[in-house]
Length: 124
Image 1: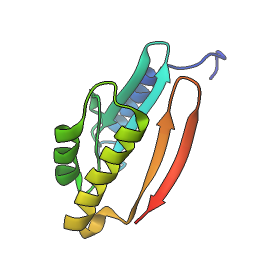
Image 2 (image 1 turned 90 degrees about the horizontal axis):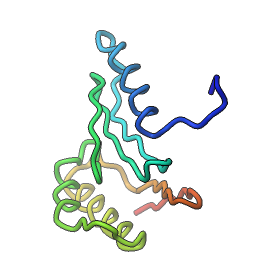
Image 3 (image 1 turned 90 degrees about the vertical axis):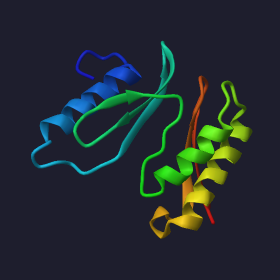
Image 4 (image 1 turned 45 degrees about the vertical axis):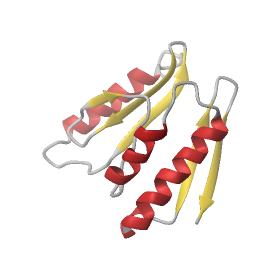
């Protein structure tokens, strides 16, 4: 921001990772996913409370992670259409919600493409 140019997704994730690591003794208890589109293409990173930076193709955080990730692993394919990816996410979250009362009652989507980004919410 100081130099007036865009920051890459990886650099943003690394900056957040450093902030989390610097607070490891009085942790910012958070489960964070950083994603976006930049000159390098689409990127997705998972950050833990100790500042680990883990790149991945898909990610899940929260109390229903174990259940939701199983559904995603089974159904994920490279180059999925947005419609198919959303259906897979809905299926994975519904699966987690049905087995874990702490998983909430809906989904907030942030869909990022080369041309735009869009936020959507779905309640069950």
